[in-house]
Image 1 (spheres, rainbow, N blue to C red):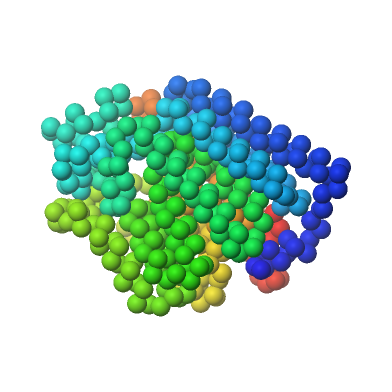
Image 2 (cartoon, rainbow, N blue to C red):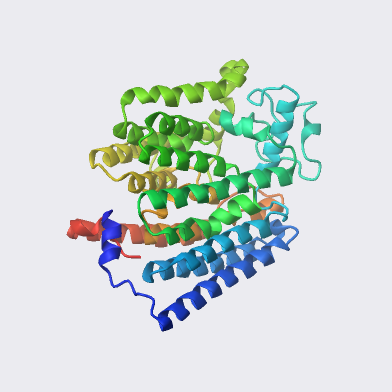
Length: 444
């Protein structure tokens, strides 16, 4: 039992008498219905890019209902009926948003273009959407504006996944299916760890997760699914499979490399060969790109900065963006070393490292915060639960971008998004320094 679980166990978690049972189920169903009404309303919007302020307000309201639901399930003892409500609502929210046209990001149209490029036996690491002769492969209703002069920035397993389907609804179904598969794996892990199954609500009802995959169709669910599977296998002491799936996750989204030292600490260092072998096999079909294999990624690192928090402060104190990136990289390395030396439990380390990376990264788009949500099912952190709600403010630049202006973040929106969370985390850190026993037992 983790320190947090022990803390919850010793709190006065209310048993369900008849009166409390009626209150619990009425409250849970009322919160589920409120979320459903919000997602139904969003599903009927033909172009959310033109109604971003309304979208943000609705998702903040959904976030408030979500946080209330998390508090409810942590405060009261739930049973199988509650779990059924949680799972049925989770599936409904995703299904209702699937037919809606993707908005707020054009990433899914880039997936489609790169899938079409591969269908012509072209290498997506050497070509780009604005290249003469390839513009016709774009979706005519949604021509690409961002990165049209840059080859792909995506890792190879993501590229392979882009070739599996060809339509926009197909991509949404694929990545929502992987999202639901992650939900099933989280339930499996909760069973193995003998933790309350109703904690799956933390992932299942999270508005950032639902919007990112079912509405926008982002491919991050592929990396999250393979990463969650890697955690399942390492818990089951299947070292080869755990490192192999970690390699698949890295080949889907690069952030998964954070977990390699944590995994190797729990297995054997020679299992790094499984990780490296899977990554090498994923890159094999694209090696004809030669030196251009990482050109798109290099352009992204050099030119992009969006919705960042602590990195923006580091950059103000640095001579250049490259210097700021070096400082941030050293700090992330320090976080990894601290997680290893302190022998931090696996899921707590996962939350610690992904949250630290997002706060120090030059790019922390709203859908990136979905990387942290699976870990919250095992290590609930009140400040970071709030972060997964306020991250919706990161969509505010879409207002100007949809009108043809540059994609730029407002300092006011960044302050509203990050300052409450960072201040809360700082307060928790200060309390932990005063009373070290509180560091692993923070109440929701």
